[in-house]
Image (tube, rainbow, N blue to C red; front, side):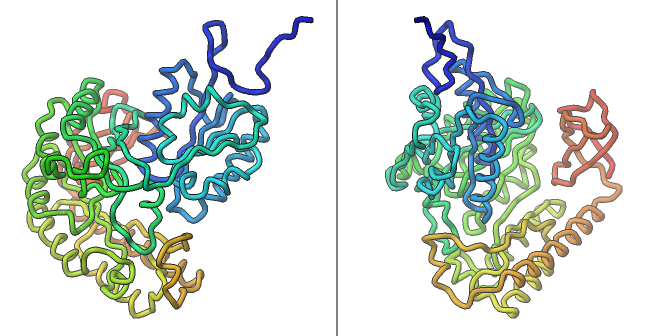
Length: 440
């Protein structure tokens, strides 16, 4: 008897006669995740997969997860449920930080077929060839200590701005953070390779590169986590400044203790590195910074901000801050508020502390009630709004260079000035992916 194989039971290795498999991606979390998802997508397309939108029916769905937001678990479950309703026969793959930290928990979510840890996500195509729907969920993961090697990646949503990963992992031991457990030890690409990637991106018409990593300022450690000929972040930006064709660079985020005077002075004198820093603070109280195991005190942070603004009064400075950390009293929170209020910074990214398994912060008492955490978050978000309004008003009437993005939304287009002020204007196709002098 002849039986047609419609491959309803799973995915087998593509042959020339087969219809190419389709794949859809969804990314949760940081810029690093977006650049890695983009790379995974390109690698599957090179293997013959057809890329689809996540809302469409696809043979394979890949969810790249995050461990920083406290609802990673909830978001992941909701997405899997959506896929189960829409395409119950499709394969579901979960990867990313949450997958490295809690693979067993994820594998027990109904509908999940494959969980890939930090090292295995880059072998996605090979895993898909060996996977069949209906098998029990397969976990492919290893101890984070065994994760080494660096995989360069970048996002290519449009030609305006690309997130280029140059560093991964972290050797710091902040008491609230699971990222070292999810991404492993600090390791970097080589300067030579980053420059080559930037040249390749320039050839495609990319205007702006955002350098991303887990701990960017720690750049210089090889794929095994050891120092590679003492390469440094300062040397990297000097080399990138020479790449023809790239108009703009931004540094996504850099620790205050690694933001050296040399880096600040170089950015101040560069035509290509934008006057824009994002510097995590986390708390304006030295007591809380100590409990968090941060590697600086607030005095150093204030010095860095002061030097930036003295050399570049027009520079945008973004700040990460966590509210409701264990032991944070009203006095500590007021210290943070007053410190941020006094600093010449432009905007805040405010995070509400949430408990993480296997972190030292769980041992710190007293625990701040959740409703108090949310109140503090709201207070700092209001402060952030005021800071951004004030920063924008300071530049009213000034001419600044705006890089406009290509997508149209409700008849409008958006772009950012060199110093990160968002500009919105009626859509003009000839301005897409172009730098335009603009009076604010």
